[in-house]
Length: 518
Image (cartoon, rainbow, N blue to C red; front, side, top):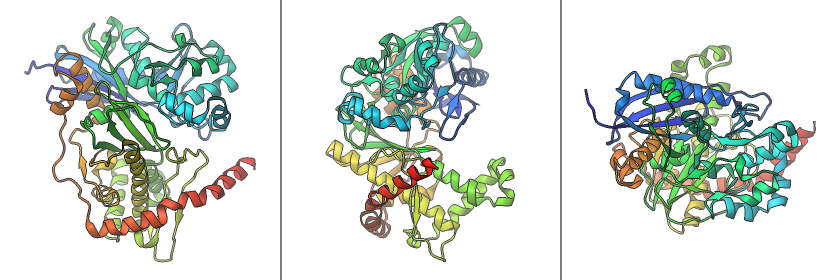
């Protein structure tokens, strides 16, 4: 049996905890997975019991340690769903369910918060445009609508901080976990004191934070017993799942960007400097002193899931198909095969993929999706392809913003996530963007990014950049832009897609307000 060292990367996402034990070459030695619930008490609200994160971590780690000798594990680090937070009382107990990143309850407060802080000032300070997904907006909602919780909250913890607390007994987090909240001063590398004061908050309600890759604690005896790991195991400051995923595919050089094809469509490009742009979010990267310029489309793979739920399985078989993942996968592959036979442009059907509102470049919580160009010859396969093309057009729109901020072109994308399995989507993205797309070899990029930080912290590799170079791989045969398809998509993007939402936005806003008043 091998005795070589291992590191554990924990990825606590919106739906499950995934843990992987990595060797120092990036090979998978063992893994575990445990789901946790997602609750929607009202339309647009998304919550989880924070305790479910900890229970899922325990279960997943016990699965992992049943496969390898726990004494081989040298350290662990955490990647996590960002912007999600939980309010704790003075005894460290959750006062209410955690509010998730996708929760939209604070949308009505955004205009008054913008008046209070100023949009440009807030963006320059935090690296993010003020939007409904940030923790700061939801804490403002708690102050207004749940004042008892707000008054009793001794601490606000991101998912990383809560899991570190359960693992070590200490309140601490990482810079790259605090900065997605919108409460962090990216210029000072500390909590934003002015923003906290204007919400009647104080710095003591937030955990101390350390740079990514810093050892911030040791596994307590109680946690060690619960997880099947040695007590005293170093716990290393991690990153939000997007940034960790970037590190997990070696986004450590200018010109490279990762593209996560998951429930959301998230892109992050490497930057050596702290820059801001109205269409982008700026976050810490894994290598010291680096940043990621990020875009996110909330209705990414979610839009494909909507298609499968509402149309693809047939109304009379919908309930059964939802419970049969193999049947759903087979149905999706069938639609993908049909869509692949259609020409670029879906024979005149074009889709605006704002099923979950839109962040950059418009930052419009009232935005909604649109499908235009319907004719009698269109089928569900046309709609399926139009979804893939609409998502690719939106990514090109965001890529143009990234390149404007960097003042240089991106050279390639490295794709991860469930959508990376789709050959059709990969080719469409290459054709629309005009850039090659490579698929990452690692099955869990965010967990690998966390593992890379753990390995560097223990000097198993000299730096996070060295660790990423040694522990990551790309699959051969990238998707390369095809000349004819690229020409078709160029015309559709410039003539139709790019001006489409600005033309529709006033009408969609009026419609949303009218429906809200009914």
